[in-house]
Image 1 (cartoon, rainbow, N blue to C red):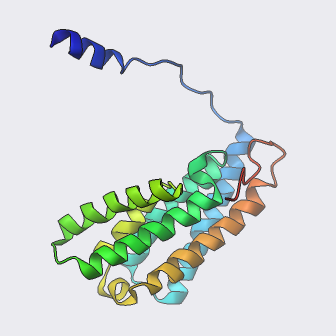
Image 2 (image 1 turned 90 degrees about the vertical axis):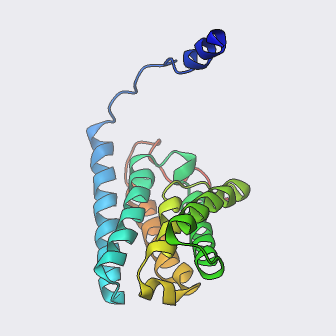
Length: 186
């Protein structure tokens, strides 16, 4: 048993050193993209008349997406297929779970996130903030619940497309080829 534990804990040893800080220009482009996106989301949510609680949830989920698509545009999680697809799959699953399963919110939340993870794996659209998006369909206000499957189109798809457009513009303004976006579409 001790040998098994030693082997297990030996897997937790670091195999590499921490990466260096990104150049200040990359940090600036990342910040600019995140700022423009989140400001646009806020204005869009205000225009839709989204409640402050729902807006807070949406901005939280898409704020995490902004970190990925602007701060690490080269990652698979950040690519358009993953970014848009992950949010759409997670929203669809969240709505389905909320509407068709008769459990309490705690159980529905766990089911929605875990099924979203499975759905994103199966469709190769893994985008970690999608887990939060699935939760929005579960813990959102009555207004969010009344939207049902329209939640997928607005605000989720529309906000995703706005952010994607901004990511295409901002990330490609940089002269650093590692920031050029996307690496792939599908």
